[in-house]
Image 1 (tube, rainbow, N blue to C red):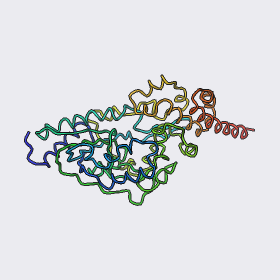
Image 2: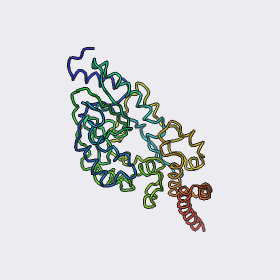
Image 3: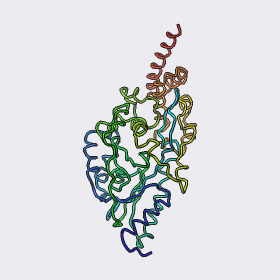
Image 4: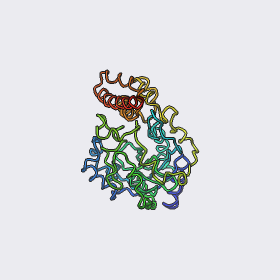
Length: 363
């Protein structure tokens, strides 16, 4: 296949990406930039928490040329996983991040992205050296996607697209193709501070900068030890991840987000299972390890492991005011896991206090 220009090749690559089911595609330079360089300061401030794997490959995360020898361009793709409006959890229910209740997005999106990388050689008419990442390697996907024109990085640190909002999965192909660069998106957050104001744990320390150690998504997923006492009440009903800073974003409102087509069924595959949409805390806390493995099979929820999910659900139970959960808490208090026992005692004390208030009110 003869290609007359780099622009023609770029158009063919973009068309193929859309055929494979992606919603957005663009090309970014394979160079460090102010956004990738800012990671150094972020790590120096300790905002990476216990995620030591970030610092271990810091230079690669800053400079794409250290990831793949001869890299010339970053082909960035975006995919909307926004399932539309969702009811807030009722009393006694837990909140699960929107992306986590269906098939693991790593597995769903990696296959079409690998196919796109494989197709590059045919499209270019030569062997193309390429490497693929879907949130799994030393890549700052949001920075690359911003330079590829897929959106701007908002004050909550998320990439925001004017039509699709911020509920986006991102993927990147490192390639040795010399492709015309896309136009970088402009910032449209303006003076809005909705995400900063709404964050219950005050994790957004300045526009675009999130202290992971205070972020509920970090403490409920990446952190393996106890939830800090100072952050437990702020966790509210969140059990896995947190969407609050995205939910309040005006760019995720119904008047902005245009539901894209789903030509190859990727969105259907990622759609959350019914039992993971605002699940009852009673159900979660009643899952033993085998039942949890079955319920979480093929989902991103596996990352927290059974112990992590129980820890998170115990905190949510303590915040729930649902005194009927006390018998379930007792089983963890009396169990042989000291981490879960401590969180259960914390929750138990709060619910017993709530039960005392209810009793006093009835007298």
